[in-house]
Image 1 (cartoon, rainbow, N blue to C red):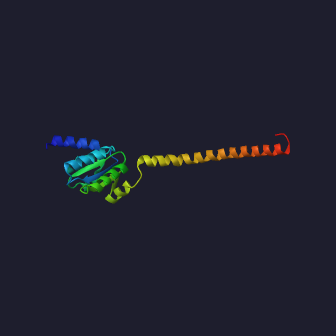
Image 2 (cartoon, helix red, strand yellow; image 1 turned 30 degrees about the vertical axis):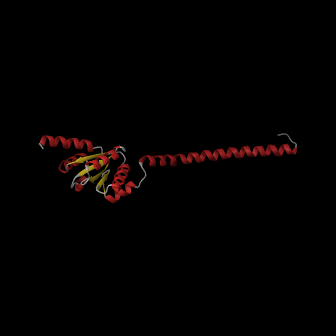
Image 3 (tube, rainbow, N blue to C red; image 1 turned 30 degrees about the horizontal axis):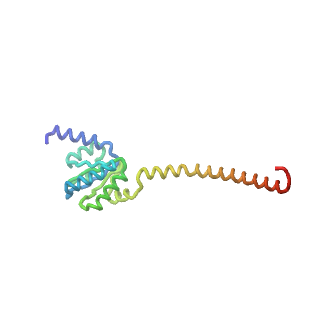
Length: 176
């Protein structure tokens, strides 16, 4: 591979990886072409990307894009799996790994923190971003809903008291 081509590839990978806030390195050695294609399709359905990378070029690209902490996992046939939601990435990979034992998860990155395989498993047990946002919206809306219910109860109680007073007055024969 010529130096110009290598430089161009490193710049392209660096540009592609510069926006990655969360990613998982996997060793795909031992997967057949059909299995690798199946994995890519499964990941693509969740808007998760899988980039097969050459280790020597990946070291340079990782330095350029701020993922240099992943360098220690660059051994063997490596692919970087990344997407907008780190929980989705972890869930998809671990679900696929349960079906196909040949995929090996090496490690990952979340922000600037290096993740171990155990931490990636913990991440996969979390709720997705959308589920967490809906829980937060529910928590924010709950006090307002409770306040509205209290006001409504006060109005109903007042209306009930006025009606009871009216019935009492009408039984006594007085004017309402």
